[in-house]
Length: 331
Image (tube, rainbow, N blue to C red; front, side, top):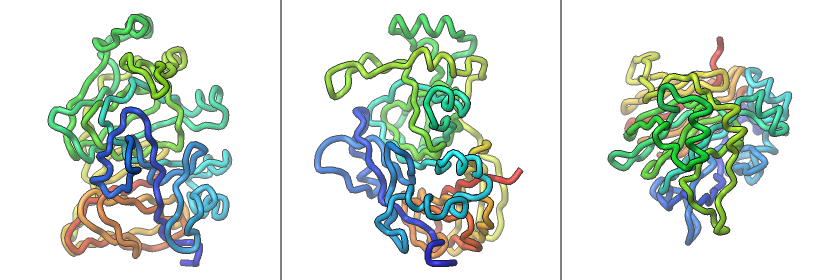
């Protein structure tokens, strides 16, 4: 491990969208004295916000600068497609939904490239970190919904009958491919792993106004272009056991072409051994307990980025811990 190749820690970027609250303080985020905080961009390298390194050689430098310096050594050959576009591939955030988010959808890569410049599409996944009893998500459309019927319902201000809702609880996880209509409702804190994109097509905003007293812009035509009307009604995703040995239990949460996310449960004193061999970066986060990841101590809820060429590393938890691990999987 050289002086420029080491596990990176970050100071997040806070976003004050109108639907946020102040609940991220309970997760250890330092919030402004007043106002709401809707999102904490934990690991981000985007024109709309980039997190800043807090440790080692790159301390006080934004992740965009680290990517410029390390290139493919940081993100891995699996992400060469992103390197060719000058993009860091992923973005990790925490979401505090004190109020419902808008009903929205994200485009895929081809549509984003054609309509949003060099922006990426946005496939994402959520892990429920906190949930009020009965908290819901909108995920997908009711079976049989057509483009025409949904457009008419939105224009008349009554889209609710066409929305597919799910009640969720702490620990649930959901995969949200590009083209999936969705809305995070109130009473939820989520961890989100996503493509590095901030493109959102807002379909309906519950007839509310923004900070300027005006309705926020909607993007219905673009949304209708990208919504997958043929998708079945999605549900909370089941977990798939990957392995369980010596106190280390790994379960698959989400797998797509952009990232794979696992939950790793470590019993007290257990150990996970990994290796970053240049193929993919790895992002680790602690959801519960405390752990040491590649020599870096993390408590809940904190994340670290392991460069793709880091080499061998270990994850340990003296008192037990639950972690998220995201990376690009080999075919």
